[in-house]
Each structure stands twice: as C-alpha cells, then as structure tokens.
Image (tube, rainbow, N blue to C red):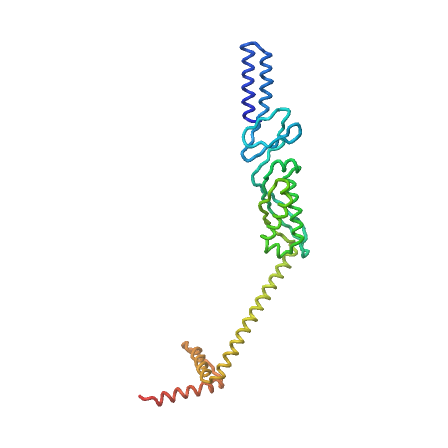
Amino acid sequence: MNIITVIIFLATSLIATATVILADMPAVALSLLLIGSIVAASPRLVQEWERGIVLRLGRYHREIVPGISWLIPGLDRTIAHVDMRIRSSTFSAERTLTKDTVPVNVDAVLFWIVTDAKKAVLEVEGFANTVNWVAQTTLRDVIGTAELVEMISDRARLDKTLREIIDAKTSDWGITVQSVEIRDVMVPSELEDALSRKAQADREKEARIILAESELKVAEQMNLASKIYAGSPGAMQLRAMNMTYESVKEKGALMVIPSEMVHSIAPATMGLATSAFTSPA
C-alpha cells in the first residue's frame, strides 16, 4: 500500500459513484471499480536506499530502482526490498581456545553492504543471518590459529584476516565486507591474576636486566678512570681534594677523613703551602 494506490482507488471510487448517481449506469460503475482496483494494485514505491526484486510467474523478471515502478497484478510479484546501505552486525565467540589453549570470549563488529540485490535474494535464504553465521564461524577459526598475546597486541592484523576470509565467502552472494573490528577480548577471571603476575614478573625481569647493564657500564667507566688515576698521581690527589671540598663546603659540615686519604692529600697540600710560602710578596 502506497500513496499512489490510495489516490487511484479513491479517484476510481468517486468516478464510479458519480456514474451511478448521474448516469444511472451501475454496470459501467462496476467496470470502473474493477479497472481501478487492478490499476491501484500496480504501482510499487521504492525508497532511495532500496532495490526491489520482481518475479514474473515465479521467475526473476527485473530489479526495480528507487521511485515508482508499475507491475502487472497477478503476473508480477515483489518478493523483497533490499536495503543497499552499509550495515553493521555484532557477533561473538564464547569459550573458544586460542593456539596456546587459553579460553577467551571475543566480541566483534562486522560492517558490510549488499552490492548485488539479485544475488543476495535469490542465492541465499535470509542473507543477513547467513552473513552473521559466517562471521561467527570464521572468528572461531581465526582465534584457534592465534595466541592470546597476539590477539591483544595485534588486533589490526586479525581484523584484516577476518575481513579477507569473510569477504571471500560472501562475495559470491553479492555482499561485500568493508571492515571487521574486534571490540573486546575477555579471559576467564581465574586466569586474569595469573596473567597479571606473569606480566609483573616480566617487567621486573626487564628492570633487573637494565639495572645490570647500567652497572656494567658504570664499572667499565670506573675501570677506565682508575687506569687514568693510576698513571697520574697528581690527578688522583686533585680529585681527592675536590671530593673533600664538595663534602665540607656547606656551613657547619663535619667530615671524618681516613688516614690513607690524608696521606694522599698531604703531598699536594704541602706543595701548595710551599708554593705560597716561597712566592714573592
């Protein structure tokens, strides 16, 4: 039922009524009503985003485009109006084992579009449900070939793999998959603590390795510095004096100096004192 059908039926009814009242010709009025009913059943209204599939005597006849299309009542029949806009379907895989035997629950979204209305209607029964089932079974297969860490850290690659596999299955049905996006990967609660402890242990291990590498570099530099100081006693004495100064430069600071350090500083101190004593006034 559409507005064109209503207008034709009302106009025919008014003409038939006027024929009976004014001309007293009921046979003509009946014929007009019959013709008007047939004509009123002919138009089909298709929206801008739709395509209509028409059968004539049970066989495919044509695809009707947006606007008003006229059919032959009794011979032609519209079996479907196919939405040609992009659609989104949610699907999931529950308690599916990954490659490393971890049970996970995965939720994903599929974005797809019908590109050939004829194939989608005539070659698949309930193509929307079929696409959803294909996506779900494909998701389970892909999960079984990926490890848990890979599913969490490399979702883009899994999304691409899912899209390619699903699109290869649906392309023969006049359906194109534009993208697949994994929304969430959930592991059982009893495994969350174990995974958390493992991640913490890995981070601690990495921190200790970095600390050991840093200590190794410090030791190498200290070894290099000791060789330089061993070849230059004066540099060692100046370094000791500098350390002493840095330690006691704050007011009120007190420093206890080992006797060995005093002996190492003494020659330099005596040299400075001698130099000051012998210098001209």
